[in-house]
Image (cartoon, rainbow, N blue to C red; front, side):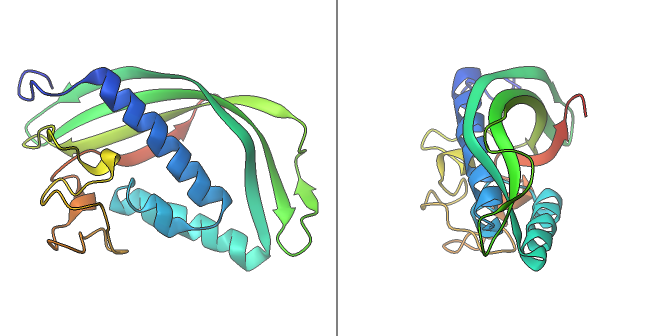
Length: 181
């Protein structure tokens, strides 16, 4: 990746991944799928949205309480004619439980059990994309026009109308795999 994008910085990328992780988890816990739209590629975001809608329909909410990220590391990186791909392992801990939305009553799990978990997050972008000096999607800026990142539900920048969450311009989260489940 650095061969065709000398401005790529692994440490900055990992910090951005961690920040993105908190955004995704907040969107999940608060039942606000539009929050995670600025991080996720189209297919993954549609799945995320459907899962959140199921919680809403059931009158429940999943809570990831006290989320703490312990370690974020690159497991693998590759580049081919079409995509740059980076797989990142996130080791974190939190209390994971479901509540009844109306009463706050715990219906699954336990508020007091902090459990460690690991997830592999896969980020992709077009092999033609490069790191933007002013920042891109993970710095909450449109990688096409530089405006503050504001995408509609189709993943299109509200300023320049570019399909930002397609991966054509910058990194997007394409897959989340739970490790050891």
